[in-house]
Image (cartoon, rainbow, N blue to C red; front, top):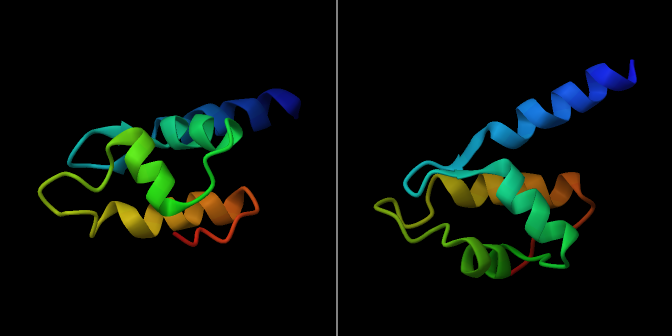
Length: 75
């Protein structure tokens, strides 16, 4: 069962969050583990939100990732 959980974690990490910049969920997860815990900080640390959609697509996903890690996602 442990292998299945690890496998799911890897798959989740490979999913794109910022389509414009090609930034995967793992990048955000790593930054959160390093102490970056707001949407604004994550955007700055990763470059997300600077693409052609100006964050319209990735911002909600960033909020979801933060909430999944126990943060409110407030900027």
